Amino acid sequence: MAAHRRRNRHHHSHNRFRLLIPAISAISGSILIVYAIISLLAPSPVHHHHHLLRRSTTLNENVVDEDSPAVRSLFKVPLNENVVVDDLIPVHSLFKVPISGGMMSDRSLWSTRMSKYYFGCSNASNKFPKVETVTYPNRYLLIATSGGLNQQRTGITDAVVAARILNATLVVPKLDQKSFWKDSSTFSEIFNVDWFISHLSRDVKVIKELPRKGGKSLVPYRMRVPRKCNERCYQIRVLPVIMKKKAVQLGKFDYRLSNRLDTDLQKLRCRVNYHALKFTDPIIKMGQKLVNRMRKMGKHYVALHLRFEPDMLAFSGCYYGGGEKERRELGKIRKRWKTLHSNNPDKERRQGRCPLTPEEVGLMLRALGYDKDVHLYVASGEVYGGDDTLAPLRALFPNIHSKDTIATKNELEPFSAFSSRMAALDFIVCDESDVFVTNNNGNMAKILAGRRRYFGHKPTIRPNAKKLYRLFLNRENMTWGEFASGVRTHQRGFMGEPKEVRPGRGEFHENPAACICEDTEAKSKLDALPRKIGKNDADFDEVAVDQDTENEPELSDQDDEDDLIGPQFQRLVNDTSVDDDPLISESPELEEMLSD
Image (cartoon, rainbow, N blue to C red; front, side, top):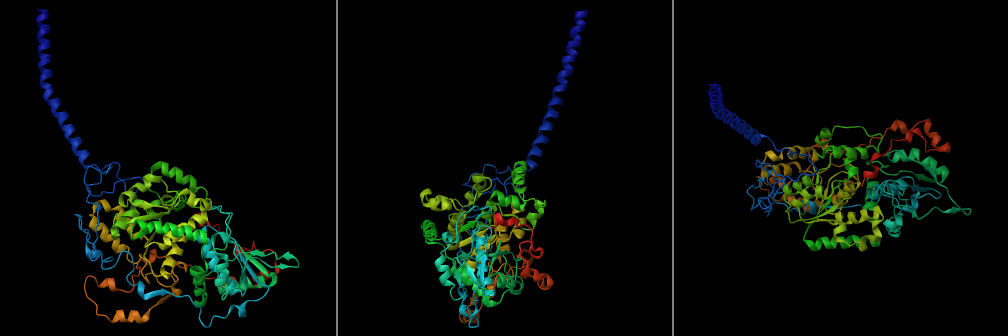
């Protein structure tokens, strides 16, 4: 009887369990369905706009994207542009670039439309006195340059003009051998010193070393001048000292001359920078060899000054999505500059103060119409993140080169131990390029931008980072055509066209407006031609002026006249130590190591 009751209880328990199975299955199925819906709607965890090492740029279907999200993006970069220059429509792309961008239509990718109506002009006027009539005896000026090659170049150029203002003889400048760059090269090992002296012989007397008096060399009196010192500043601060001491050496001589000078002095600047400063024959020969090798690879090439080194990124204070590892590594480097303040990385990027990533530079160039088959010469030091960082750029432009890849170690051996000589090789290749792209506003970018304006307005692309920021941020939500049109619109006024930068704005070395002349006769004939009114009319405009004045380099050249006069300046004549003059003291130049 008891056994029968146990069998009945077991039978009822089994029946209840069988009834629960469908309910459990239904609940489990519902949970799985909800999970699947959430998985489909959730964004990919690896998707982040600023990720330094990402490879999420969507190319044509022939390119495999390892990290592409599950949901297909609208944003696809055409694999083959096959650009028709007249209307910029990528023939084989599903996403046709509209004409509404307007900037590149009816103009070559490799030249500026109005360049043939402008030319460099730096000859002295008839009012510029002969050197013999203005140079005083026993008045010698020396300078000690600062920074890398191109920062020193600005100092050398301005030193010639300063000597002319002071009616002094210039001693061949000393190059910086002690700063971050640690380059022991002398002036004559970088520049052709004999050419420098002879070419300037009608403007400023230049000698190789101070003369000896009574069997002894003159000992120069050391002092500094403030940045942006104008003619009156030199006449008040330096002239009394040099008249008394005979020889004066101006230390840390970079950007020590005002942007606003008499036209003849501005033209003297151009004669120094663009004609008197020639590299030595070994540097020119090797540099031209690199240029020739780039030319053999294709009809045109683009040179890119990438500036994506760890020091540059650390100094900028920007964030590129590398997580805690990036913050730790760049933060450690940033501690070298004790006076740097912490900043908001997002704000820095919104203000256009962050270098573009290599991927962003590549996207900008493709949007402007440069085909993936274009050969790129990259002038750069150590790229942060190495090959992983360059991989997205290489996916967009497979033909990437540098001096290390197109020259042998033996060929580079005479230069490789000297940072300035290696920088000079990059300078030559970038200067000779059909298109030069700069990713920062350092000294090399400024010097080359001005030089390319002077010698024919060859295209020089400055990323309008402030405006491009939002395009890059939102690019996954737009088609390639929308993105490319936006890039071309924002880059108007940043392509190296004549007069796109207003005279007087920016550094003179970047915008040598006083040395750019117009072929008025040829220009008047163009103006007399009937214009087609329509979509391409804007392409005939003479000037592509940047309307975003907030993003233009500011001209900080206002001299405080009250500081230049008064009894305190008598001490410059009577005192024995000018180095510690509080009027000429300045905060440390943090940009020294990043300037080139």
